[in-house]
Length: 161
Image (cartoon, rainbow, N blue to C red; front, side, top):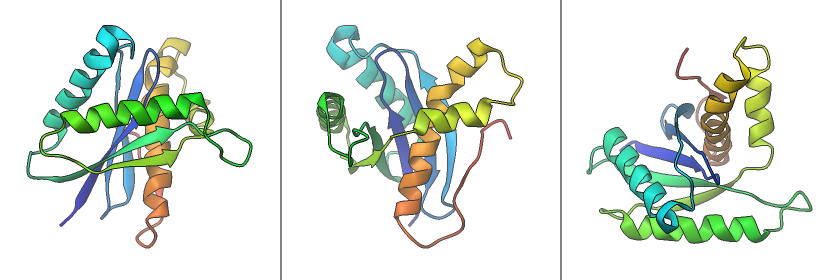
């Protein structure tokens, strides 16, 4: 059975989403949720994430969530923001029915990767800002899929391709 993945690049104002699976090993930017994490104590963002999951995956699909984990650049230690992500992931996990496995992937330099991908795109600053978080989520998911080992060469596909 194919396992599908929803990658979440959690942000204070915008949260990027990407999808992929363990068969093709491709990661595709999905969307950016423009829901502040502080809105209704995080519940508004959890609601939006649950809606996105229901729109993308059937209830019977094998789906795992991958959260980008902001590690420090000093040998990958965790700082205060990583604790926020872990706590938020726990809250999301508690809301999912059926329960889904939650994984974490180092997200260091994922925004740099997204900026590099858009550097020659011809997009305006506003357009880049709207896509950056979904592209960063796709980069995080690409790295997670690569960590699974085996399978085809890893690459990220832009949903506009």
